[in-house]
Length: 574
Image 1 (spheres, rainbow, N blue to C red):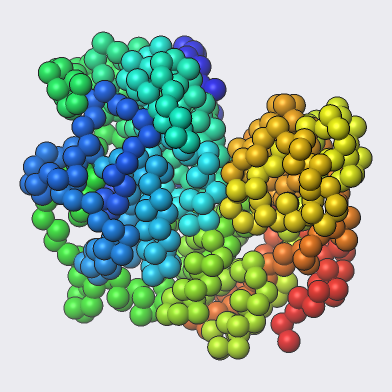
Image 2 (image 1 turned 180 degrees about the vertical axis):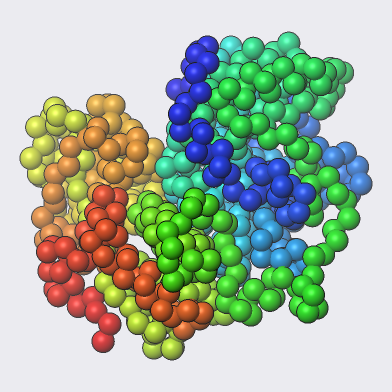
């Protein structure tokens, strides 16, 4: 939980993060003037009350320019059509996001829209703005969609302050009020930001400066969100609306003083225009002047035709070693669950070769459907062997190799206080279990299937102290000792907030209902430099690369156990 403190030391890791800000118009000063962004107004409902907000989905297009305002709500299909037109005008480096007019995570249309856009435009950079209440429950789905840019509105860290700005919250249909509601909001924001950073997302903190209410709390917001891994903070002067329609805007002097204090902890974004929920184009400019290539083909079509469309830049601009591939680019896609291994691997490869790796991790169904259609990439690592075989049969994947396997284990608190020795113990009276039956696949359903095949599902369900919908959130009960055991993918135990805080017990292979999920990596026919693509794959499959997958909680294909699984389940390119 975020708590208010007054330490002024700047966290050491922030120095490097200042250089790592993505080229996003709401996070990077230079991008703000050149990169187009599109806000899709598909989310009318909200799950909290903000005293400064008046959501308006019938505002004239040239009316108020502020958050919570849109000319009208559009459907996911309309949003996709709007995205198609926008990317044709602004190119593949543009950003497509959802910012309301309510809270995106309180509207199922948000996820429908993001999935449609990702399916049709696999390389597009997606972003989202949220108050963070539903973020812990949504982070897996957002990560699977390949979302890498996230803004979270955090207006305080003290429950008394937050309760004045947000009088009530609605979580799961239950209205909560006062400081207890504020504490819940603060807790969820903290958990959500930490989980987002762990999944490789760039997180920007938005804080509304409300004079006389939260000014003394905002430095603590910067300090604590920096500790959680946020990349940048944006202090937004109050726009008098809603219950504060007669309030005064904070003076530039007051806002400047707050920015100076907050800058001790996080970089400050200075150019925010406090955009509408249906904003389009370059922030602050009402006319979209399309940037065309000199050949007359717009940038998006040119990049699509060449097969080199860039995803959000995760490249490391550090000085690279001299190499044959210096200055070249390589586009790599993978199932989102592999991101924890691929991101450090890509940084090492860039430092080793001077090549820039443009990487995206998204849910396998979206990427697979796209590649079976018209989408293109150069290297692809799917989680489904059948997909690789189908792509090869179509001539789209030239060759593939076994990469790694996932593994399910029993996680207990450090020290294993309940003395769990095997899966049978999860059904014993008094053993407190954590289940996540509604979590996104493969987390929830696979774990339930393991329990069922072991014959302990009923007992484990009776023992459950939590039946959640987010594995990363639910495992907090194991870390804290509030529960005794959970079945999770081994990779979950290697996340920053979990590693070293749990014990792991193996599950016999006979209880795994299907073969361990095999991941492969292949070179696609669109590789502009097949030698570079093969060199990258060789690095992934090298001792160095495979060690990163081992560290992330996977069974490397080149390990002794991995080779056994390769032979047993026939994970080969034949």
